[in-house]
Length: 120
Image (tube, rainbow, N blue to C red):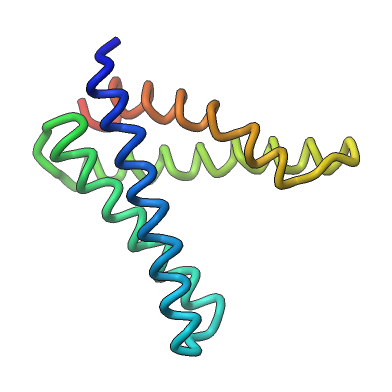
């Protein structure tokens, strides 16, 4: 496993999450409706994440095909996260703890699927 690539992958994830949160906070401070602010923030983080991974993590040309595969990965990771959150809630544990526990799994599957399928 390429340690530099993995570190870059994780760093891009942190940067994208930070942008998502900052955009959401900024839009809410401007009194934008919550659902719309959340959508814009999520799309901002998602787009930045794809662009940075294409350029720095996997060094490939951006394409609609790769972006479509990336969106499939996003949906898969969302489903996986939801499984953790709902499982923790079912067992009367904190859903937030379920989200936190899901993160290493999301990072691992996201990296592997990105490397071998999304950015191939």
